[in-house]
Length: 115
Image (cartoon, rainbow, N blue to C red):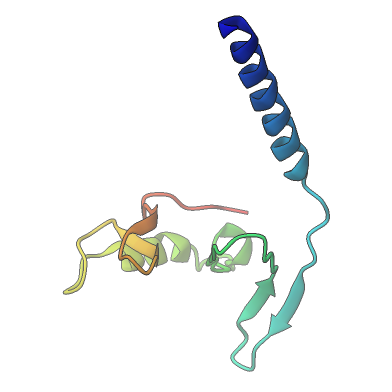
């Protein structure tokens, strides 16, 4: 009897996992692109399957955006964004606080993307 219950539990678990994995297959994500009057470009991709919000901020600075003789601005912006101020310590930017006040995402300033 114990083996039968164990086998049924394993089968139920396997079927549940298989179903949840098949439900997570990625599909095409519909995106909308807006350009605001101040030049800010917003790319919006809505997904109402969960109550989660993700925000990604990118700045068009870096070697591909700089003219000859005027380089180093990406490095300058990195230092300006990561400098300590009255509200937070250095090298810490926290985004995505949920209602309970728990921080669900931290972005270290020592990372930069060059595209």
